[in-house]
Image 1 (cartoon, rainbow, N blue to C red):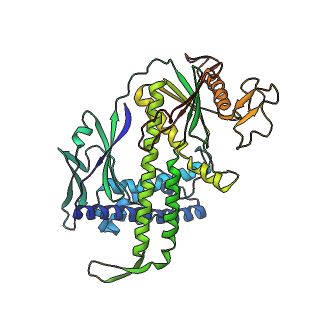
Image 2 (tube, helix red, strand yellow):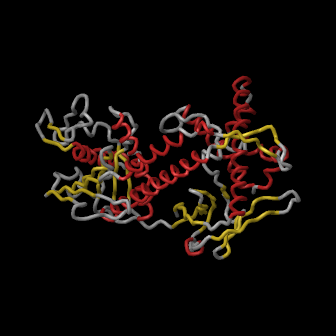
Length: 460
């Protein structure tokens, strides 16, 4: 069994939407409240090195254990079910532990900063997580019942929302948890489910991909075919539109209005918040729509490419390159940052392989671009980013930059498989394809449909 997610759009009325927004606000408040306590505990621990304080701050459930005390001090949070409150506390602890793991070298990747306070208005809707099966939620037909905690009279509170198609979507699946999210003003129920994994299939065809910032990836398969997967060019249009909206929105920040916070009796509490102008909110709403569109189109594009690859190949191997945005020019840095979909592409390939019963691997592609795939000579200083074709100074072989890197990726992949599996060799050509016979270009439209003819170019 494999963990998967099923996302269902909810039909939420105005009063119920306001109640769910209130639940999210309280969880966001609790997150900031616990982070403030964590900051104080951090200062005390640095001064005293008290192991009890350290255990409370850096353990997985230390901050969560403060919830009973916080509920007594702040009774209003009792209107939220215990599961979302508990998971708000766990999110703070997880952020702190990621910071500590990165600081002490126990985590791959770059440095992770100490968690920051989050604004419910600007940081996004704080999701409500019910992490235990059938605890805090129930499904009846197409209706989803959510428990919201208890009111002032200690009576249990519920809301019922309509979830069209939920029974069909969850048929035959085991529900492990539920997360309520809100995206672009629309509520969704994301169910964590167990999905059966198919049996491994026979391996006959494989492809090695070289990811880069000029296209999504360039691959060479076991039969000598080269495939260039074009980058999602339409994302640049959305990036430009997002830049324009953000620039217009940011110029409106100075028109924000100071608004006092009132209590239940309409009396000022001494606290306040800043309400942006109507123009700022209009631009921000338009910006969020563009970013959501970019995110959904990226997911569709990557899923389309991944499924296409696994219809043709039984084993997909990709290099570990991920753009860092350290290009020579501003335009190049922006282009490389936009190709951050490469990291998402690896996750998409991994999941597609799992659900189709096929294989996915990542190889270390250090020096694969500068090394000649014919004689093994490594060019000193590397190959400049703008060079697409080059000749080996040692043997004179002419190379296409990405194709040469993919062919070297074959050698690295086979060598790593032999080392990691006690001499095991995959049932594909042991030295990779001898030569490239055909070259193809894959182009994907924003709708996720492959285009042929002008979209698919074949060079014999």
